[in-house]
Image (cartoon, rainbow, N blue to C red; front, side):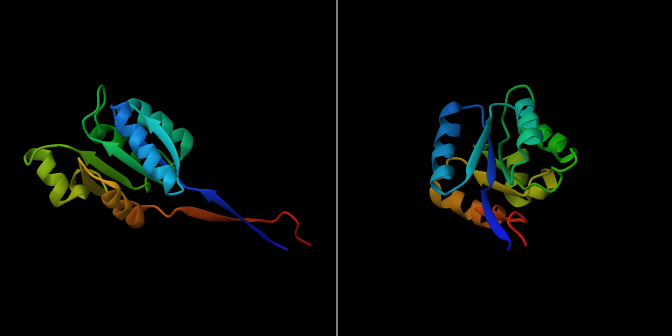
Length: 143
């Protein structure tokens, strides 16, 4: 007999503002996700390698190592290349911000979520990029 086990999907929230990370943690946990957090690009790389998230919400304006470079480096890590990374930003309508809105993939992201955003916009991103749970087959108890 095979037993199915469901595991919560992990979302990595990367933002240098603790208040934004806390709000996103609340929204994500209410929706059944497990949340990991990072406050800058270097920490995001470490947490992503350790936690292996199903989705990364990456602020692009970060101290030390920005979200563009952190995403590029995360994508170079074995096992993280295909993890969807959605840029979050309050960038103005110029330069990379315009490119993020037109074609996020051109600058290394799977999607773009403009700040400020609410739970509805977050739900759209989650629906597109991250299932709530994964079913793991267990051989425990088989005859």
